[in-house]
Image 1: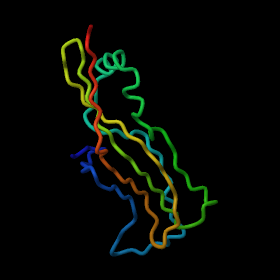
Image 2: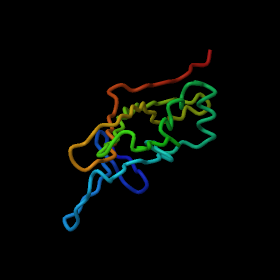
Image 3: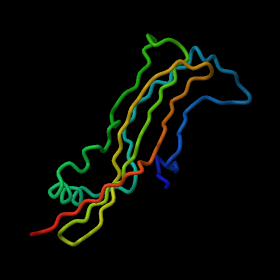
Length: 144
């Protein structure tokens, strides 16, 4: 499965690693700060606001795990020391919802996220580990 992140296609499962690398330069790892802000992180096609509102009327908890990392800052204020790698572990769950109006299939992806920091022996990095959950959620509502 592939996903697009700011013009970057990622395969899931997979890793996105942000690091400094160069054959022509050397880096002082103790001076590198991998602090970052995640403005928006999502998977799959964007579901329109109207469609998501219809789905939420049927099943209110759908979409509650969207954007778990949106707007979050991961800042190394140097109290963590030097050579700090910041890692994010994401498990992505596909949810399929059949709308009752027109029996339309809506596919959306939610995720759980856990973040940690670790001292690095080498150049520090910001790492995103992406795993697709072996479970899928299929939701539909029968009209009685």
